[in-house]
Image (cartoon, rainbow, N blue to C red):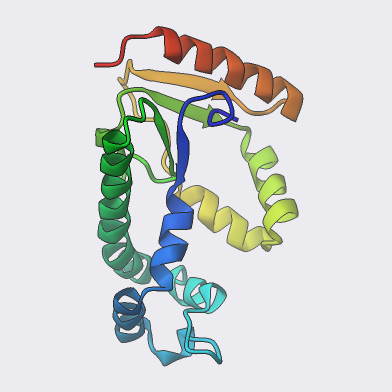
Length: 181
């Protein structure tokens, strides 16, 4: 919605991670860490199989993050540099782990979208077809709003899509009116 309001291209960090899964170097590192059984019949990383192994305990999750996060952060940095080179004034970094991955360092303004946990959970179950257990694990792994940050605009997403679109418009007008350093 913010991209549609003229705040630049939306850099979906999850999508960047999915792209990286298709790259040979990433695939090899993941196979070395988690085994051949994370690959499908075509030799591609099966996200479901990888997820079962990676999220089975904290050590495996950390192993996955140590492989994926640096590459994802580097790809985001490259995307931002390319956007700047094209003269794009705004871009959006959309990430559930913005703070823990250190991606907030690329941002001049932050928009933190909050939703009641039960609404978030039901949306993920409905839209991504995840089990309740898998959804709960992933929700608890997401970043919480850090204390003491004055550069964050908080948007409530407990409402309808139409109300959220109206809020996105308001936030976009606010940000477009601010002088970004």
